[in-house]
Image (cartoon, rainbow, N blue to C red; front, side, top):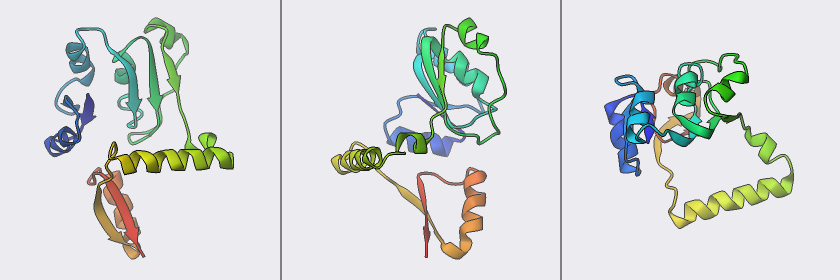
Amino acid sequence: MGTVGSPEKAELVKAQGCDHPILYREENFTDRVRELTNGEGVPVVYDSIGKATFEGSLDCLRPLGMMVTYGNATGPVPDFSPALLAQKGSLFITRPTLMSYVAKRDDLLWAANDLFDVVKSGAVKIHINQKYDLKDAAQAHRDLEDRKTTGSTILIP
């Protein structure tokens, strides 16, 4: 399952193996996840949106589920009481940062090698869907912020 903002992005994620793209602007994604899981919820939610989807993402979790919040596309997650996690089923939440995981050189090398091995195996495909001249970096950032991009975006010197 994956939430997307447009029918075009739904087709893209389907092509990448997502069985159930959910158009979160057109339907209640929490209700849809509950429907698809027969009311059980999912074990993990990865949320890059932030403020707009935080509460709904928590509501998609089954008891003892884990939410990974890693983005703020709509603003930072609002303050909340840890008691909310207990009320919703003894949930776990984390906010990882890459620098915490690769602070030591050995960890950085392991992570980089692991990533390259996964890409080389074909398990993950990298799609470069936008290229901008370096002089157009500001436009690239605007397009990213306006959700006009998909896949990877690169700047060319």
